Image 1 (cartoon, rainbow, N blue to C red):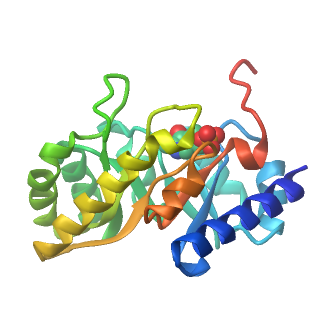
Image 2 (image 1 turned 30 degrees about the vertical axis):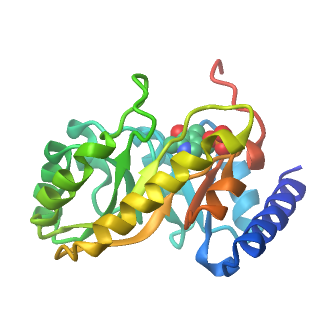
Length: 230
Ligand SMILES: *Cc1c(COP(=O)(O)O)cnc(C)c1O
């Protein structure tokens, strides 16, 4: 099942890139493996996928321990300040930074461990109460503040769009994130680049790619439905 799912998603990514006049290698597929056993991740790894996303620190650390070293691990879930110590130095990218306090804790540990940490700033694009992320209006101030942290490097923006039945309903949100990233880029802030846009999940990754996503985070589409009761 996983192999067919991946093939199907790969085809759709290629089609979306074509429609948007983009190259396939501009988009990275992140396999979101939360709640899934390592055997399933191994199966996906065998198909050539090297980017995996997890949303819980403990689960992320357990999987890092047992899976191949050349995996790029993406922390995509809300990160509490007191858990930063478990992941600094282990991730390719932390997608979910939405406060200066959190970025400062990452900086503190990065200095201590003599590592650099790449991050994205999470934007709550639809201003949903239930979601983490900073509001669009406050993003630039936060980016400027974080840019002064020498070991923390902003690479772009991340958003979790609303859960919708029709992916077209999220198109303007994705477009808004892209526009925001262009605005920030134009400011030429030291230690900030805007090359990464992490947006689009199983229900809407094709629209996200059409609107400029460089990373799509797909869980259910690859691994099937999640069961949180086990
Ligand atoms: C779970 C999760 C995903 C993947 O969601 P699917 O709808 O299963 O593709 C993507 N991004 C984040 C932040 C998630 O927590």
